[in-house]
Each structure stands twice: as structure tokens, then as C-alpha cells.
Length: 107
Image (cartoon, rainbow, N blue to C red; front, side, top):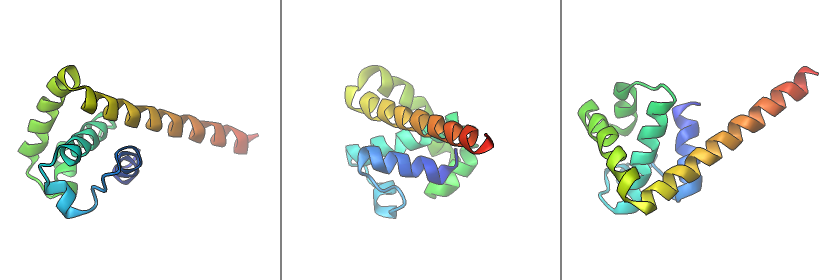
């Protein structure tokens, strides 16, 4: 999944538009959680921390810090966990629909 597709999923699930520079830099909790969710989803999809950092105009160490922080957030913060799992569910549904469409067109 591309970084842009992940940003769209995060926007759809959280209501936070991470293409808006003000939202990326915001320390407001929903914006921070949306950014962290996008970062971990991109990392799980195989995108390099340096590429993720350049997308958000952050230093790569900020991405490493986010990846470390996300583990404790998933364990301790129900709001973040719910947001993250909703994004995962949406991505799985999108991938399932894409596979179905590929099989349908191949027949």
C-alpha cells in the first residue's frame, strides 16, 4: 500500500488530514495519534523511516521515536489502540476488495 493510500485511510478513520502541515506538527492528541498511526502503518507496509520522515518533513529520529512510543501507546491507551485497529481493519478490507477485483477481472 502506498504512503498516500495510508494517509487516506488514516484521514477516513480519524478525520485528521495529515497532508495539512499544521496537523502534522500539532501536539493536539487526535492529530498526534493520527500521525503515529500513519507512521506505524507505513513502517509495517515496508516504507523506510527516512521516506516516512521526508513525507512529514520530520527528521528520521522523530520516526524512530514514534515507532518506539507506539508500542507503549498500544498497551496503555485505549483511544490510540481503537484508532489504530480501525485503520488496520480498513486496510485489510481494501486489500481484500482489491484481491476480489483482480480475480474477477482475470476470469
